[in-house]
Image (cartoon, rainbow, N blue to C red):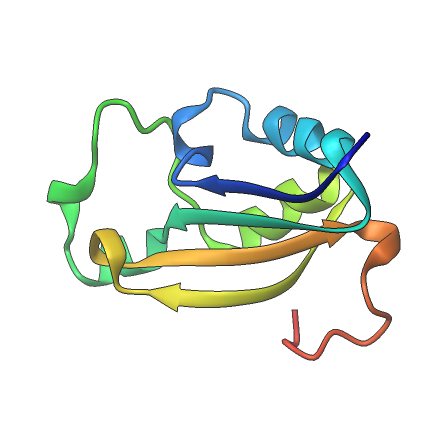
Length: 109
């Protein structure tokens, strides 16, 4: 049985191979399912000089472009993105299996 929703809140930055984690999430995800991922946003970190939010346990910080490529490499698509003020600026991504992605993405992603 596969999951309808896979949620990873501030997990991706802690792993040494984010693409492998995303590929594992895709394996767990049922067709038509949803992946929700939250990460600190690199652009907000740099623009806001939020360098005190850099932690030794974080192995990665992400731009939206890097996340798009990582999702695509894992067979996933980003369907929507929200910017959040958490941790000096974060992104919440809503993703799905690439084959389940709408042909026309309303979020312009």
